[in-house]
Length: 370
Ligand SMILES: Nc1ncnc2c1ncn2[C@@H]1O[C@H](COP(=O)(O)OP(=O)(O)OP(=O)(O)O)[C@@H](O)[C@H]1O
Image (cartoon, rainbow, N blue to C red; front, side, top):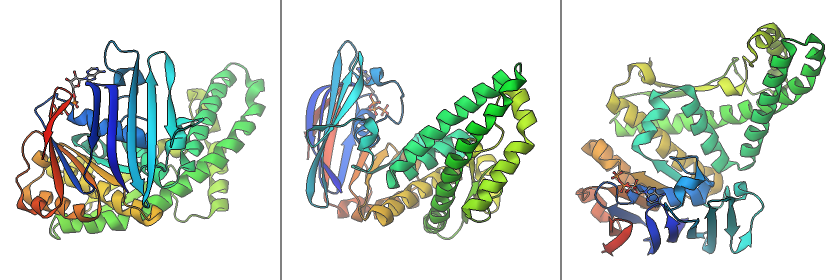
């Protein structure tokens, strides 16, 4: 799979451009604040319907404009596909695939798969569990689009259950209604945990191998799914029984606090290097390498699952990696269309082995390419 062209109108600092991309390596060079990340962001939005750095669609439209447009043409299994998004200051965004208006933005999932690696990825390793849950959810959704709606339904039921818990605090008669929400919560939560567990079980050995190669055999990376209750195996009925048992056990506490103590909304991912939790004990370099290993593992998993390599977006990451890590990253380019941004020329001889195109960006204009 590869992106053939990108057309942007009134998107961030682009008033109107159309860029044709190389099937292999594309390098966008430019000073700070010229629009390099904006370009990657537009491709990410065409893939997932959302930005990787803002959840306000209004911010995506060029300041003082009413509407914006993203058009991405891709080639998948030798077939051309066209994704278009219309952003409107006063209305929700709309999406078309091959000229056909889609009902929901989520209809985009599965059309264009991308993996982004950016300095922001350090948050997956360093910050709170919600970043790791988002990582899991975004990746599973790319491989299994229906997963997204299960997570959305779960979050809706969870909010309703939590609201009811707060009502029960002063009206205990309402307690009998709890079972309605419990039943749905258990059904959806079990599905999520099974999917997350099986995803992590596939991700772990691949990221371990990659990390091993990047660090020249020096470090051992373990990635483990950490759920509110011990998921030793994936027997659905056992999980359901345990789930119900724990909901009953914590019911009193849940009512007192007005929140639900257990379930996949409390999940985490343990990322361990040489038996030490990377979040707490990892050096900056180890944390960055762990994030890179996870992202590159994702590339392989998407290929396994969909039989197509995703497009790899690398946002300003070369300056942060040492020479061996850069070389390893470059070695992954042979099968994958890669779109790279950088402030400085990437002078690594390995990259010259690839068919590549270099573009210079200034103030939302592509000055020239070679
Ligand atoms: N909605 C918008 N309308 C107009 N300009 C915008 C909008 N949103 C962001 N910009 C502009 O886009 C530019 C930032 O672009 P971007 O983040 O892509 O920079 P970059 O080239 O990746 O820079 P860096 O190397 O610093 O990461 C800034 O000049 C900012 O003012």
